[in-house]
Length: 336
Image (cartoon, rainbow, N blue to C red):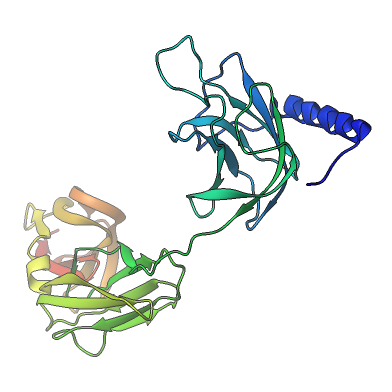
């Protein structure tokens, strides 16, 4: 065992207590609980930690044979790191710390892997043994062995259950999965009833994009099956797709008027739009030529529109509502 001169030992002690003062200003613990502080402790100084990278959020703890956290520190910067470990508080009924002579064990918390790992003592630099000694001092080197994460199937984290659309529109959505082993993920698409015009793009990172433009003959119920694979495990998910007929959609829109009809100077038109869409109400002559814009807007709900006939001659007119893919027509007669 390596021996130190009195001077070297004194310097180490001074360094250690300086580190303890720094620890009082260190980052707060976010994983390990703050240990119960009694009137007696033992000083532990870690001068080296191997096997894993210390990053912001890393923590170290000393645990008793009864698995009680009796010392814990947030690790900042480079070693050495000082940590007081506390003796059981004899003024309480609970066992909240070390007993004299208890074996010390150490844990390391990795914020990236979100795991607690055993930290073994690779060398005792100063101290006679890994036992708790009241007011004692221990200088050690630690080594962390990262446990091998067993193979685990990937999982879907963002997949719609059912998707609705309408003929003549667009149906699109994204799906996403993840893998705890950080394996490369692929997504396969299959459907027994969707047409070949469906577009599916596998981004190769556990995400994919689905898009389909159903025509006016595609009203009905469909399904799409996606398989998430990490090369070992395959996990399927199913998305139901409903396509409403364009005729059924058009029936939800209302377009009425003009009132009165025939009309002289002015009249009112009424329309009801069930979805938030851009819409236009136009006036056409009997030959279908555009003669004026009654209203342009965006939104949903019921609209009462004032028709101004100034500039128009007597005759029959057609009024057209365009709202998304829906076109509706009504007619009226202007009498001067």
